[in-house]
Image (cartoon, rainbow, N blue to C red; front, side):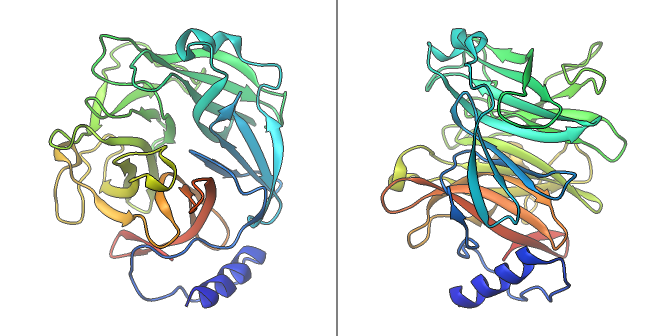
Length: 322
């Protein structure tokens, strides 16, 4: 069956020709085939106006990759090859910058990214912009939102949503009191002024707060809040799993298939560890010619983070990974 899926993926990735989606609804399908430089962690992927693909991921000074066909990936250097010293007050001097989020608006590339260290809420989300998305072309635009040691939330794992009315929102968060959202000024990409409350989208009050990495994606009449439950960053012992809820509003409330509010720990499981796929999580979603595409990382048996890509279809308004 995996061979059949690989063939289907290859056909879809190579052309935009119509192909009937697989009809079964199942969790834990194998990732589509990729090759080349296949390491990534906390990925974000966009399809550029020229039809090629740009990915960013957690790495020293933010790592970049490119692909011409969504299957063959190559390293494209660091977003900030000369370093990002403005982030070190939040990273204890470490160059590793976390969980970037890419998008393209106003004829330029936007990248939100996190500066923090493990186990602390002294964190900040920064914005950078670029005319091309290439290594060395990014200009930092400063802090968008930050948290401190007294905060009950963590300002990491950003994701920008532009809703159906053209409003900009930034969701973010990791553990503590859960997933948050603020309004963003489209003119600056920074936090909007005026009354801009910190909104709450998802939490796990009964499970140690283990929810993070929000990604909100609009399809038809719904906004889908994708998150990761449990623990990342432990190699093949990671317990990360991909969950989703939906809402007709970009600010929620988000509920799962059973109707449980994600503020009360709700979430429909979409993928978890299976076979040699360990701890899949921190996903992004982007639209391609053939389907919406799920991008995520997982760990192989050796504990190395790898590219995971699958297609998404929708069954009665709920995503199905294939």
